[in-house]
Image (cartoon, rainbow, N blue to C red; front, side, top):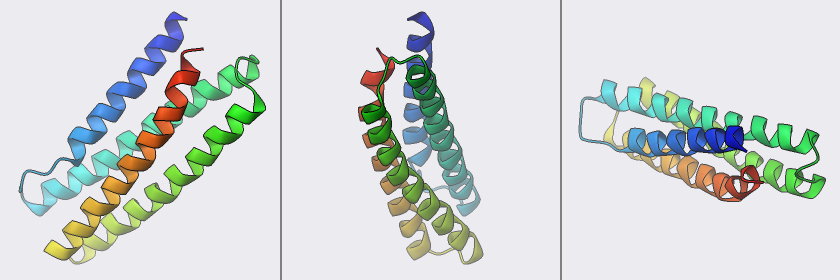
Length: 128
């Protein structure tokens, strides 16, 4: 149980870091881009950590096939949002503009929303 709690804490800290990385302070575009990539990295790591933990729980029979299927469905939504965010950041880097920056912020908010929904479903499973 102690290992599961540590994993859950690591995932929660990663999500909090992701939210902080998404915050913009009106800095130079390079800092904005670095923060965007940091947010992408942290969200991907949080997702991967949670899925590895779920896979372990599934192998041990602690969570069933239905719970796994729902987690994978939330995971699909996460990866769609992740891919959109990457494409948006890359487009922003080609032609930095206020409009592009706004699109990146919207894409990162969509990614944060997808990660939040995924984590809301997964967190109780990790406590089993």
